[in-house]
Image (cartoon, rainbow, N blue to C red; front, top):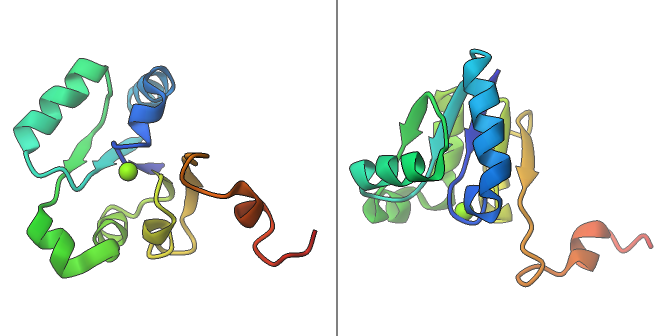
Length: 124
Ligand SMILES: [Mg+2]
């Protein structure tokens, strides 16, 4: 399986869970791609090592690329790695990922109104 994972406000929301998950996935031979707009690759790799996060690929970006591609950069990286399962905290990014990808959104309840997420069509 190919799994993509964001760092900020995703991995950082629960280090124990993502440390465990990524180690299990990598040890089992799966492709784990860390996808972040953090610019400094070496610093990011050291940060992930400190956190105990395992991965097979690290995709970093830059503010220039972010400005050029906007929220579609991560979607293009997911395409590049044929990501099947994606962990991300921003819905505007998930919206630009292939709909066939199973996306898990780390929800920050201080940022999002869960009533709107739970009932986007006002059916309740
Ligand atoms: Mg994030």
